[in-house]
Length: 131
Picture: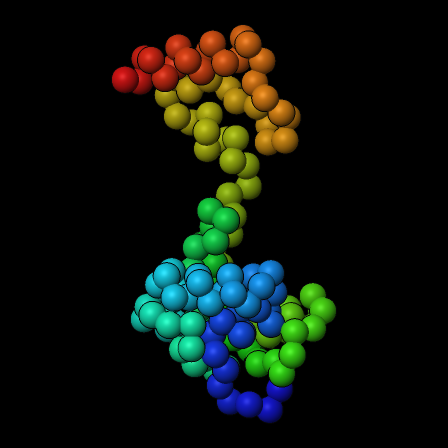
């Protein structure tokens, strides 16, 4: 942890944001990442301590301030020491947001499997009414 800069793809991999370095490199090269408000165009872009990363991942906006750099990829406990999470809080209940929409049929909880025939018909009626 003695360096003062590191490639962004390596840092994302060391911080366990991505499972593989190639996924981190592809994410950065796609321009989906901002470093201090500027879009990172390459995976080789250098970052250092106190840089702020902003990106959307898994349907959430994430904001990380880099606290340190690593020489190798370590455990989860080592990885969380590399950044400070400044992300906005996640909504408490996604279902409450969904129920505030007008005439939306109540959906199933995530992980409950496929909708029943009755639920599917209700969704079809709702989709037809929305058109």
